[in-house]
Length: 130
Image 1 (tube, helix red, strand yellow):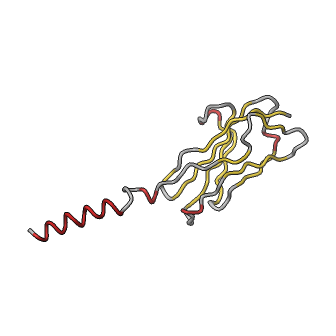
Image 2: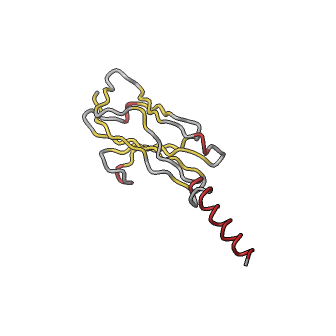
């Protein structure tokens, strides 16, 4: 009976001091830094840099970011126009502005992948102005 009480107390203490199951593996949505305005002026620019906060807490050899550009607001396969797999320590990506048409809406999205865990997508839409 004493052993059972000790086990119950031990399990109770575990629930207090240990995080919920899976907590350590949760991957937070990337925080997007720029561009973050409704319109992005590309006049006279050959490149556009996309920046986000890189989360180095989970950095390992299986860790990476999925960077994507969609035409319009919907983030679906039919509107995907560019994708790139980037190393986890990367917090930016620079691309040629030739992909963007004047007056069109684009959505950029970043997802952090750690092993088999995926974050929610950090995403932002903007109108390209050339």
